[in-house]
Image 1: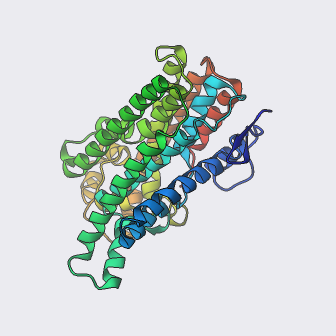
Image 2: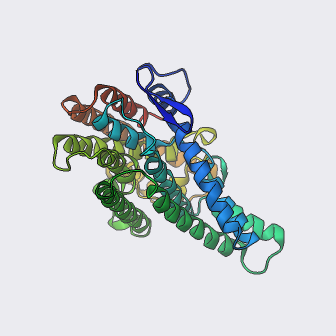
Image 3: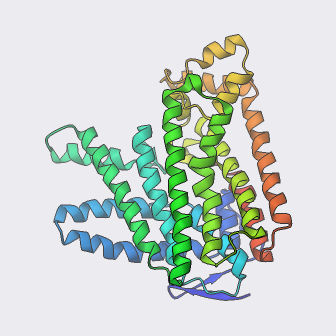
Length: 384
């Protein structure tokens, strides 16, 4: 098999059997893209080191702020978006093409992801992310420890907004490092910008839903999933990768990627809905039942309301008002009793089937087809 050099390391297209692991996503990523995650992490670390040094020259406090932003980027994660973009690219180029030229563009997606996560945590008032304090909570804690004047929580939120903004600018800057012809980079930028617009649209609908739950529905919840998650997690990264490779924008491969990406992306969000209620906090890095505490109108909760009998619906009306763990656990059991959780599982399965059907006749490299087949299942059967 062909090898690609990435920062002095071989980027290998690995065997088709996943390695043993408790996390199916990590297992498939390890199996199909042996060193891509390391290549992305190395690219990010080198880029961010220069950026942090530059900001430190402005003021020592800026250096600390920039380091906090850097740590948010490098704190972990599966690198799902660069991975889908990579296989979108590989599907066009095959396994022989060297990845160095596009690695900055793939890595930029992780900066965009950090921007979205940090802002999302502020909007959701989340306390933890990946088992650690969220950016706004950590900044508020530093404010208190330093004895600064003013409201620590307000300060923390302001700092987190700026961290997200900085990550967005960094993503633009790193994307410009891709060694591509100017006309192709312009096409890539159009795809990238569309992904960002759709992410903002989905995020707004997500916020609106929490404040207008009486007018929400399963269809609108799925629309949120389509734009908040499917677009920038799977569909647009795939198309972004194809654009990096110079694929024909009107060709059958783009149509197949669009169909696959929408199906897997929606299934990814539906799995998130289930994990938000039934996930293990030690695995997800977030408290169980947060969606029930806030009353977030996810597809799961909307289906539960739709399927509930009158007594169950009255109990579900308490979502968003309960705080105790026992109350949340009872609501979670009630949601399951309505049949909503089982229905969501079927919806996930149906979307994975749709995605695999899209791949069957797609004109893509066979190794990429195998990898995307594995990722469709792993990304939607995960536990975190």
